[in-house]
Image (cartoon, rainbow, N blue to C red):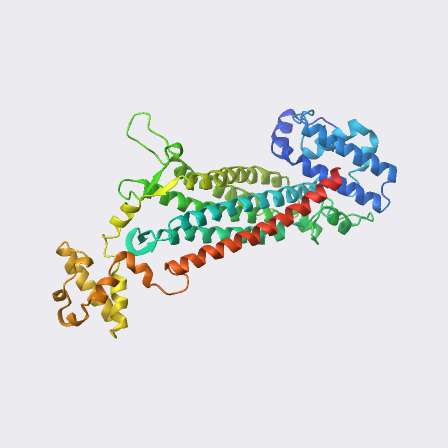
Length: 477
């Protein structure tokens, strides 16, 4: 059940065997291990390291092994790792010729190939899920093109903004997450096989041919770097950490908005839970878990970073520990990305509560300043004047809607119907003209921009996936 041991005089201690096995984590890599093995076999045949008959027998055997795994007919538990599982199962099926498959490769470069094949597929699937979440945000924004709400800084009322503008802020965060993953894909989608244990091989292999079979556009160059590199996994986990932080911020706002103190949203009962002791409770558990699961994702990044810290070149068995944090982060993030779009479609703004909140906090004070600037008053003087007026109004329990000429003192000439219109919270957004602002025109443009981005990236990912699936179909038959 092991691919090594020819030097050893003793059987491996059972506790050591249990401690060092990785089959529990890497069994799910078997399709990629077989896919890569078939390509490697064809590469050996191309350069004459296998006869046509040997290569044919091994390829047919690997395809049969794949179907045995797919049908659940093989118990992986006795094996040390996925490479051993595949090779021993193949040997049992076709005999000793299976021993020629490992020519010119090592488990050190083999596992990196498996991980890269697996990860590029997972990354593309995750990007599709993020794009779906962006689509839901765009659609929700378009449902409420005129709804105005308080915008906040320091969690204090700041200025009126469109609800749609606030939603699209998350759309642009997620756009960056997709772009980061696209950039990372360039470093994931590179071909490692042929590095051997660390030094390459003296056998006449054709690495570029095998890379082409597996639809890799680039072949990695330094054999020592190839077997010791896990940057591509760490970079991916870093991307997921940022993504998780963005979604955690969204979860936090949904939790806040659902409280009676804000009362900005209502969540469908099917997406909330109650209390075992307090019968009145309606808890936003989904939003809380979106926020809470972020810890698992960020911890996965930190876990692998600590594994890689201070490792000497080249391969060390520590690198076996790259899979638990990778798989944990993928599992948690896939759950988050599946539930979040569904959850958001069942979140509904309470429009009247948002409008009521606009009347608190002097939200159009900045509009007041800008009006005075337009009348020729320097901004700092306008800022001081408006601050004085706001302080006076607050002490008297009045709002900007209740402004009077006498509040202006020597600047009474600026108390005009035009100013009162500018101080209307719902009219505030209509006066914004800067690129990327909260005006309806700009918010519509932002939504259209994200829609174009969705189409472009969906087409790109579809092309990737079709290329990889074509390779898989051709090699596995």
